[in-house]
Image 1: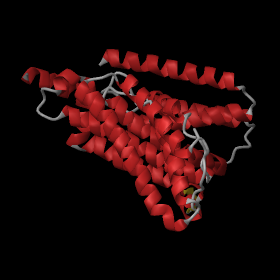
Image 2: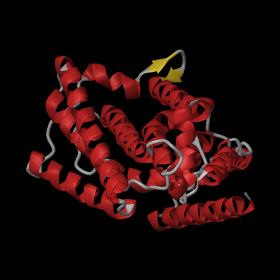
Image 3: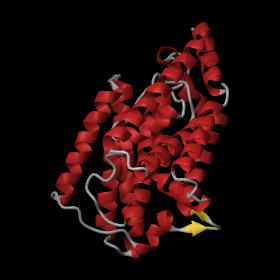
Image 4: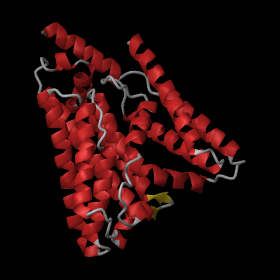
Length: 323
């Protein structure tokens, strides 16, 4: 058992303190350079900041997805959770500033419940995360269709929209919120025993159950945090569009997974981190924005994104094989 603990700890340390993901940042720099060339140098720093502002909901959702992938899971209910938050918060606010707090609390409470159910079922019954979270996606979607009776209604309070539309010192408020959440989670993952256990659990789940800590609780907490991040992202997205819209978060499930994988987090768990997720999100958003500007069809966007994801997965697999 002691040998298993030592191997698990060494594996976690290699994953956790491995080389900084310079390759992802170089790829981001290359994507920005191509973006400038494709737009003939007409893109200003203000435009790039606006892209960061628009990327904030995806960035926050991708941080949650990163935590889940680190423990060897995946969450396909992220997009449905974001859509639910949009519909619930808009219907509770009804454009009134006085209703902001109850709308936010109810929305996030629902997210915590979704995350707990996902994590508990997966960890306690050792069921496949793919199937459990796909089922949860369907349940959440069915639930909000019943709640709205098929008609999205409500609007976001004007005072709340500042979290997505506001600027502070020339920087988008949404970017500041994203950066603050990133800093907190990165600190937890990199500097605490709790964070280390994400890597141990994802790196070797069999060993983690013998390592003297509650690995089941770590898995549950990963899904709870993922759902919470999806909820915050849903609130930010709601503040951006200003109204209720059925299915507004649907694209965020695959995009959050794509951004996380591009950032170097392994599907197999235990390898990766938030240092790569940040540029991964920007690469995903800038590529989509660039292809829209130059008139690439939806089919071309899917093909490009697929090629990038497949390439990064292959690179991650090679990296894992060398550890």
